[in-house]
Image (cartoon, rainbow, N blue to C red; front, side, top):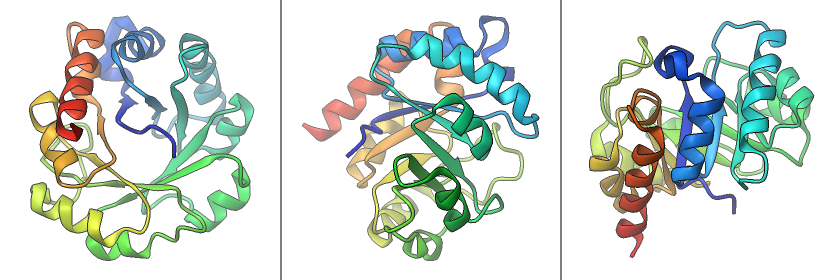
Length: 209
């Protein structure tokens, strides 16, 4: 199974002057195992341009490189996977577009959505939001750790917890059954992304011990 322990979702606004690629490089140096490029509403050409820099920053690290929603950009970049939301391209269409060799992640917000994720199509789900988060204005109501545990039980594929998570809550998410934790602001907005990623990775390891 792919290592989704510490899953960074890049946010251009939060990365600021440091930029997407440098934030990704630092996070992976600290222990991030997967990096998703999420540029909502950006044209494919812009996603490809940003993705080239991020992919170069990850070269030789072993970290997974995932593109949010844009299957054309993912193919052009040779990405390891694609992630889609409930309102994006249907998972079956995304799978047909990317083929069998790339990872496909799907956002789920309820136990019913988690249970509906087809293991023949989807490799893992992003389950949440666990807590309220400012990185997605229209997010569903937070489900808390109990809600996360319910989605983990309902899903037939590994679950990555997402939504307002940090080093302080990463361990609880893993103990609730998550295969990993996805974070945005906890790394992108950190003064030291490498140190932030290291703290999250440590919390995940300790929860698994």
